[in-house]
Image (cartoon, rainbow over all chains, first blue to last red; front, side, top):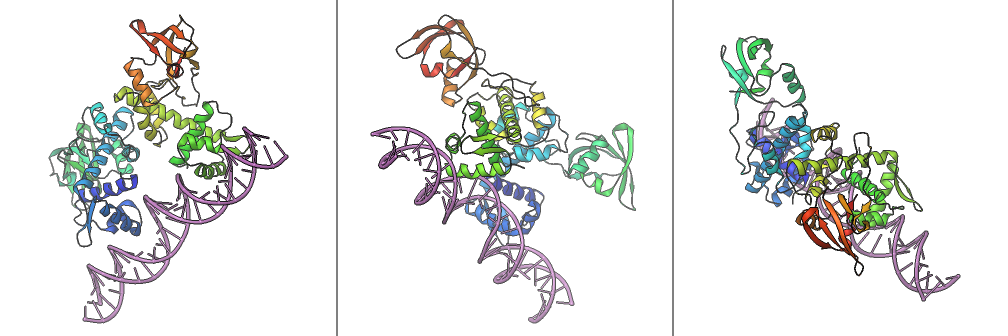
Length: 217
Length: 217
DNA sequence: TAAATAAATTAGATAGCCCTAATTTAATTC
DNA sequence: GAATTAAATTAGGGCTATCTAATTTATTTA
């Protein structure tokens, strides 16, 4: 069996590789997990011994098939619980993450599947992240940023790239959620900010940072 | 903050005092928790230092007001999650306990209250145990055993005293659940077994052990 | 009450996961 | 390429929660 801590390492490795990091180094992991690099080195050895990752100083850490399966399972549970917390318990999307960080480690054979069924087999979590299905298949992921949309075009929010509470609260304030339509009215060359129209009424200006934190399609 | 382990000790102490044990000794706790008595002694010191319990070699361990509050909170969450698992995820009542053992430790300010609301403010868990409300008030508890019912009388199942999987599965097999009506047809003096009728049709004989494991009213 | 038994406690270890402070190794920069 | 800087690793601890093996203290029992 694997411990809660091991699961968190696997998840972090998964997350970093999803981010497109080609080489997952102890330092990168330490940074990601807010932990000391020396501790990471210990755990890397442990996970290697258990054949959950392969580690090579040149190539960094990579999940093995087995490690990937565990990581995906945690991610699946995390995102399902997020849906539960938001839809059933009425939590706001800036809070669900931290609770799901705990819930994702609850262990029981059928739990994920039963939860999945109860929630109606959702494909995306409240932040727009795809939920792996029981087979470990993942719906395609959004990759166009709001900042890439041309002036005059309208797009629809598919996911958030930044899931920090401050950003999510700001979105809440602007009434932006997954599915919200946004029309790009103008791009200001000076600071790459954008004038946008949110769902027929609201017009506002958002920063470069903002436009690069929202996925759209 | 208190650790998961501390919570489990507090819960065990609570459970033993609910069972009517007047003196909660290290040995009793060790037995209850399937743990070594020496470990218990250590933790008793720790919990005393934190003022969550009072310990006295003569009187044994007692929860302080603060310790009781934590224990009640865990019990509340445990029982609410059991209701969730049974009613929403369709788990059977012999399984919900072990999963709730994990879920009860999930920490978030409003979680218990939101779950409570979502479930419609249930008063009893699937085993008939009372669920403390947000104020820590507990509905009255069943205390009449099936074995105490006189011949000819009919009673109704309110709770199970024994929550082991084998017993619960046996009840399932007999179609006995909370609320089921049972009529006592005969008591056999030889071994204190009982002939009973379950809800108008089924007649069967149950052992002394069985009759002492079901609460009725 | 003395002896035997049981319970409580202490002492000393261990495993898991983390840390700081070297040290070694690799990558940059001058 | 030598010097500097950064990253990886090792060495040595710390803390929590557990254990086993004494030892001390109570409680029974003969």
